[in-house]
Length: 143
Figure 1 (cartoon, rainbow, N blue to C red):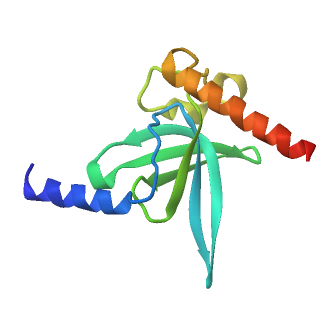
Figure 2: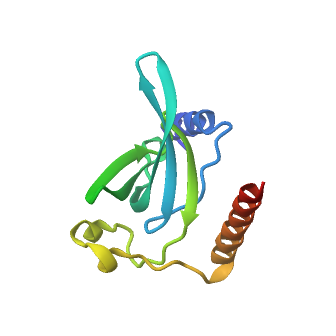
Figure 3: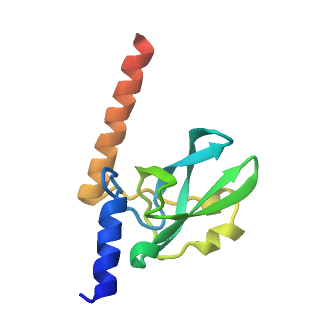
């Protein structure tokens, strides 16, 4: 490891302190909670969509998230280690064969759907986690 790589590793360790970054890739549906500053106030804003690209470049790592908002496609590029990114939640895993899903920009409706990855340990863990969240929501509604 050269000096630059050591400095980058130190910075990444400092920026991820206390943060849990899930292992996600293109095709996964994620929710990114972003810190938004409005004047003197700061609040958290959620941006939920499909990760269409991931760039792994050390400290400069980033990912693209696409969602449809009021019938219009919206994409945001988030730096992975940005202090503005409060947290990242993995909602569901997608089963895709490409690293970059830019073709989704031209698709609408059913052709833009992504199948859920259900086999293997990751799929079972995601399904169990979703079932657990649903049970918690159901218990909260009963109260």
